[in-house]
Image (cartoon, rainbow, N blue to C red):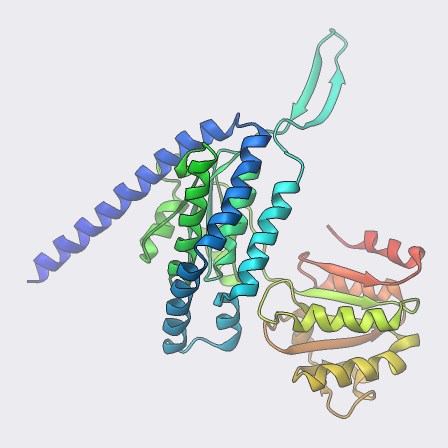
Length: 375
């Protein structure tokens, strides 16, 4: 019996390998078409994709409901569920993002540099598609549509590998996009998704699928990105966690700053683009900081702060050294009072991950400090 099971498992692995290699071959063929596809044809895909997603809304939300129910049964936390869950508003956001990508200038064929040589040669550096991009992401369904749209716009075919918890949702979005591809006269295989939860699928993609995949892009948390960078046998575009900062300068419009800070933290606390640390100029710390902390507390956001921040509100918890380098992905934020923009920049350069940093100020001289950030 044991031998039968082992043989069966081996056969399944061989089938998966064959299936992914075939996906790779089809993606390679599709990329050759996308290489020279005109902008108007690629842009028509986005119009069709938006229509198909809206038409398939009920199917997409039904699949997502199953994914969310399964994730809850598996004991996933609130931040995970928030990243996974879709609703009508979020589908509208997905469509709005596709429309935004459509309006981007076509990057293919753009002349990046041009120069003449002494022998009379004129040389140009021109942007071209990479070919086939493999994207491995966690259970956040909108990544499927965002990545599919961006790759298509840039003339690249893409093979998506979703986390198992969001596979149903992501697959329904890909199905809608594949229908749009056909209507736009483009290869259906320009956007594909691995239909298996098997972890072996990710391993096979990291090995390149017999040379079909030109680059891997991991989209997710620190552990996923680190594992991909460690195991991949093809080039990787990766980033680690998003420890994002907002610096409120002494010249900020404080009403505007309050709205921005609350939105930056509380709009969706479980995403990598959410603010994790707010830095306050000492001159506005007392007046603005008290209002900010009160508003965050009313929204059930835990506030951790430096010694100066502790004096602003009794509900602030002392921040540890670890807090400044922690991606909370939850309704928790750290606040630090700084002397000036230079100290804010030093803090960001010390603890930031290069994801997203911002400065709120009405003074252009203060805003220019953003160029002091390490790149």
